[in-house]
Length: 174
Image (tube, rainbow, N blue to C red):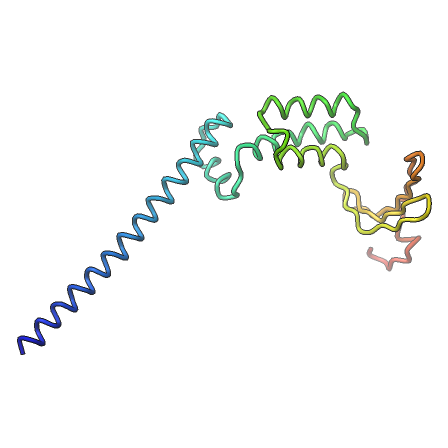
């Protein structure tokens, strides 16, 4: 009987040690995750000069680094530059200068994303395109409206047709 009691006590002790070992690992991992989140929060706080912890935590949840948030801060400038339908070279230079002032590295994905925004008008989604010998036809949606654009390779002139549904035979409700 004593052997059984000793065996049960040993088993109970092993279960208890196993429980606390798992609990210690869980708590240690939680502490590490909280420390990592605090490190990210402080990095964002220092770079962005923002003291709102809820906003910083939201950036962390979205996995945004300071450089990405700074690049997103330039979006209103990009939209303003595109307001007249095209970006002038001075506007492009000013926006890229603003990126440099925000310490967005030229070789970063964020800088490449910004350059892409400057090259392609916001709100345009290309559905398909067909290359011809001297022209390119593309079907796109600009601000949710369908249109056909035919571009000349030689002189970069474009002809735009807004009422695409009549040309492609789309059904009512398109």
